[in-house]
Image (cartoon, helix red, strand yellow):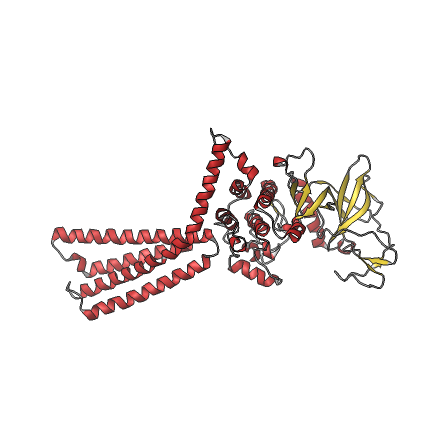
Length: 508
């Protein structure tokens, strides 16, 4: 039987029926033997099971009668309520009595209510009312969902097939897009904050999906017209799904943090592993800042190369190179969604032609992803050669100029070749380090290829044109202008300028 749970619960623990002689935790809702004194989960003093919850049977706002408790988390409890005038049931989330006077908790609760009340989307839980309990605690009334959260599904299944995971990811993107359009950034997207609900009759959800993904828990959301509760240095979110700029405690975050988290959730669905695994949050935060997660295909070779690139672009550690929006991420995921691909029809093209075009684009992207690393490795050779040749040209020109144009002696050749070889080795070592840092993420490897390839092209082209101009002048003028000290100095300046440009390109 599917579980009935509120989209607003933090732990979504079902409450067992009280049994005579047992004790109940008023925080998590668990029941325990009569000889237990405190809850083994949260150390809260236990109450007798026959202790009546003051909210059970109460009517909130003259409209919502509390009929049962569904579950609870550290900060709040969730009840099932029935409307007193129409045949409909809702979920009601209420702050725990212990935290009703804690300012930060109350502000987070109100923030969640404000965020959710703004967003109208099939993929964000629908809040219908905000009111106060008889004892003065704020309460959120929301739709009552049937199903389970994504984390519970993944705990049971391990991982999901591509045909299941991609549609869920696209629904998450749709919910986030609706939030972002209203200036709301979630900041804590993770599998436990995505609920897989049974689709309602008449829902606008695409292609009659069996389940509808609903985004939950906007308690730490950033609202565009509301001052943040957190300051610079405060880390908000869940480390293993958190964007690096969040891990740094930056107060300047935007919708791209949700793009990162959406990519991380898709990573978890397809691979069966979190991007960064471990029990120590501090270690996880350090890894988020310093390294890319393992390639998705290291966990599952059946993941298409092109889809791996989409995930890694969404999870780029530098927000400037990250997928720009959840709308763009959804567009990139569409070709991997059977329903989505069928809906993409080019102008003047029939469905079959459009599907073939999409498939060709996916295959092309996959081919580029497969050759990226071999091309990057091969690029190391011209990097070393360029560094050595340029050094030899500069030093050779200086020695030749000092000898008034005479040929180099064997000793002078050695003096030219030794530093040239050394610099070639240093350049190759630096390139290998850069490649190693980028190796896990195919988009990073591709960017490195573009930067280094562009710098090499400029380098060889500029030196070649410079030398051609000098040799042409010597040929027509019958001079040895190319052997002058001025030209040697010009070569040094040009080489330095090209090297600086290459470094600038690499750091962009």
